[in-house]
Length: 495
Image 1 (tube, rainbow, N blue to C red):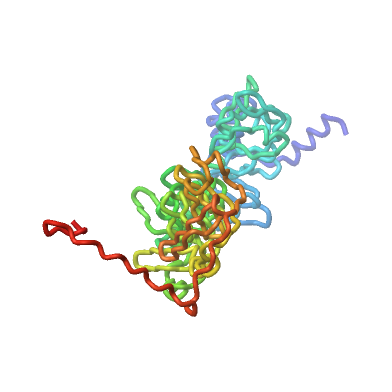
Image 2: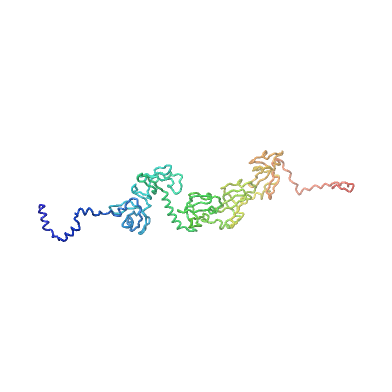
């Protein structure tokens, strides 16, 4: 069919037109063609979601639905978005969060966002923004901090942003993967600065708020010793620091907190005071453990033998700990049956010795021991063991100006006066004997009450005098004195 025949055919079957309708259309068009009208018609607008798809933008949204793998978010108006479900630990419809825009998915027609504060898995220069969380490998270190590699991008972490507290040696992070927050970003110059400290600070604050809500006076809480000072130790209870004053360290006597705890120790302390306004928390290690003085009057009655450890030595005596926090004094006068100049002559710190309790006052928390009474009293049998004029062997323990002290047995000493050292005149004691020398001496006197034995070296080689006469031998008759003649003038011989 030719074109002319086709037009004739169309014209034959075309419905009739209304002349009045044609006039109205012509008037409406105003003499313009259809092409001109279409050219002036507004073009379709980009959806609001597409216009909001700027990577890195931060938006606040509300959860409207939770799917199997995604969480659907209402960003306000007609904008909706999706975020991965794995980015939420706890979530329910109606919860509000802050999100960072990743990109607009044209296929699904929806914005894809990440919850702010969670790891950006597909980090790039296009979708990163200040506040984004990234994971990077520490590849190097310089004077100012650490160098990281993040998805092919080089980043820098200042030394002060590596940890919550100053780290002397940050080389320990080399080769490790660490989570960081973007703090500075320059896409043109390809500069990226990140911080690990900010993440740790947020975590600490979250723990702090949670811990503060749970804390109450009287609770027992575990924590890590963060720092030790002269007046106490600060303990991290989980984002919240509490102070253990030196007076609350232990039932034991101590001068410095460092004697009881050190940085890094895990301790269990009792909360004894809280100030909600200042946030100050007072802790006690002492009150977290049983008081050893409770029931001490029956457990450590006078006369009870005990074993203790020397904790401190003073000129007046030695402090002995018989159990944790239960300490008493061993006076210097109760250390030995012989005279000693200083307690350190007999014991040293850390020695374990056997004692006997000689006094106890639980209310005043005072306890005293005796070392010499824990064993036999050598003076009780000294007179029988060392009779007069017997020759004994001993060791010179010390020299003094007036003589030398000689130990006959543990706890029993005798004195050799300088005049009894030799048969000739002795200028100094050291000219005759030396400390530690073994000598022989004759017993001249034994006084158990005064705890004194007198010895003589010069008489040790003399023959012992003959024994005293027995009672059977009759005593010689007394010699009668001649009567003196009377003196003249009334005087006598007793004037």
